[in-house]
Image (cartoon, rainbow, N blue to C red; front, side, top):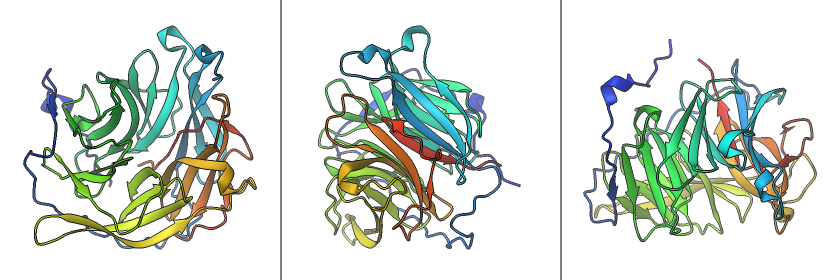
Length: 347
């Protein structure tokens, strides 16, 4: 039986105040490196029963008629890609909205970040196309998220009005954010937990980690240059970073030296250059990748100026082999401004 890690909300009453911890002068918790998991023997193109793929996109957007932009969440079976349903923001004060990235917890619940009149995070039950909860972002515009498998805590990267970055943590994936972490030296746009509760962030200033139990970020130099940092995820063995500028996923082992410093050593990479729709890498850019059960699914959109209507697609590759995509999600459907993908595994 699979045991839920989502805790009773009454046992996790949240303070109304949010502590913002700036700089790297805070205490550093001992670094517990993530333990590698044994490689799955599941065939790479076979799903476990009941898997669902969530695709976040924004439709109807244009430079002139920007008020018609709507966040859209589409649901497919995975990896066969059969359409199951969708949710579209089209009423009330949020008639102008844009979707961000997505993430999933170990119960199969999916969270989708989006910005409208205010920042919000939508929660979907496994396989459902109607949100079961909406979390507020009191700080700015939510961009990306990740769920700690051990605690059920939801971490959300939010872009502040002044251009800085903040990491919000929602205890048990619900309520208001309990803590907000920031660092004036860091600009980050993505987040990913490993299996020890360490929260990694990346963006224009590189890779950093908020150690489990710590209260400040620690930068991590890498031995491989990343052209443009994209989404990152713990793949069961290593931290996998998507390089938007290279159409590749690089896998890094994070190690601590005798002085307490951290470093990332490249241990492998996956190249995703042969998409099933025939487009080549120089014309498209990845917006998010999601690794699950020896596959990786990725959303991509056209690069360059496209009048806020950037056509894109969603495809799946074998992981870590990469190469040619084995599945185009939606049977060749073109997604407008696809920004996020996440695979939900049901109980």
